Image 1 (tube, one colour):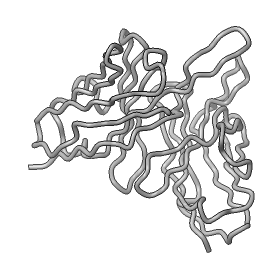
Image 2 (cartoon, chains in turn yellow, purple):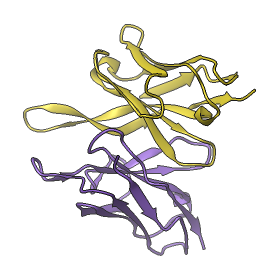
Image 3 (cartoon, each protein chain N blue to C red):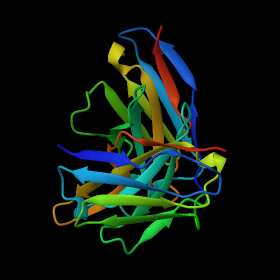
Length: 127
Length: 113
């Protein structure tokens, strides 16, 4: 069974830092691009960042670029999100999500939509 | 950025009746090289993470009941629940994966009338 378990969410002051983790199990973690998506309680979903299978390529939403860093440790089956210079507007549930792999008769690719999600971890930025 | 606009914000449907949710993208998300629409639909129940329902605009994810269907192309898309069940009460989101940032619609809340 595919499992994604986030941790690391906490109450932090504006300007502070936090590192989120997402422990993966039940699938070949190193074979999937991974993403972070956030959601303000009661509001909609916002994509935050993605990372390729070996960690060499990362992409960010403009709202977090330069402040957040996504990384992964395939040996530990774990995805990370280092969050610096936190702002009140970063308050949200943070979900890790796995990309969907789709295949033709000859090849397989990762798509930037999400077939498995963790339960989320809450980050609250407040003084 | 591609803006995804869903309508309505909420709807109430009687059990067994049809529910229709619209999603419009600010630019075409039809990729000409493979003739596929880069659009997915998710269901989110209270206190739970989203669940993938549909991708490529109309391909149902494994295990998703066939009362859920997706249609549309280019910029206009529809999620249809053909016969609403009590367990379908949720918020539904569309998402484009044509290019980053991968944007979601604002969500449509489906309730029982």
